[in-house]
Amino acid sequence: MTNRLLGRKQFVLDVLHPGKANVSKADLREKLAKMYDVKDLNCVFVFGMRTQFGGGKSSGFGLIYDNVEVAKKFEPKYRLVRNGLAEAVQKSRKQIKERKNRSKPLRGVKKSGKK
Image 1 (cartoon, one colour):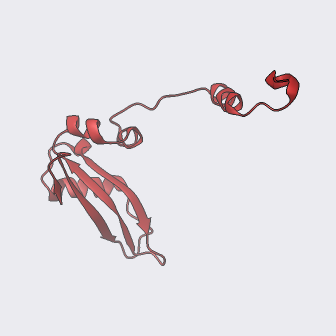
Image 2: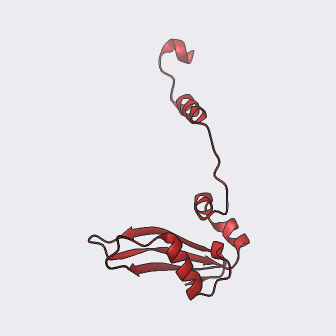
Image 3: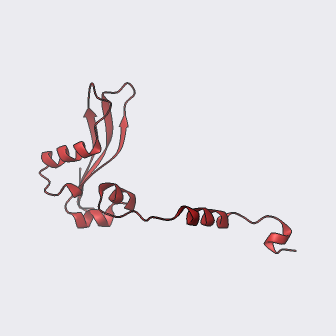
């Protein structure tokens, strides 16, 4: 299906792969780029792949954007990171833990300052 508002083609992807456990997303991206005559491989996004019980068949979603700028505008950050179009923000483990603990509710009369 063509989505002109978001500047992309979007579709459900059904892949048959008998004898294989699964197919890599990189292989699927290359195959889709060849099928739809996409110049830039960064415009093709494949996600949500689920293998059917028993194997041999997988299904997921695919998006092919008109250009990279539109993809960067509408795709979520985590998918851009997975495709190599954005850099993941590296936070230190200590910062993450301190933030988590600060967000917890304070218990007890002395700690919370209430009377």
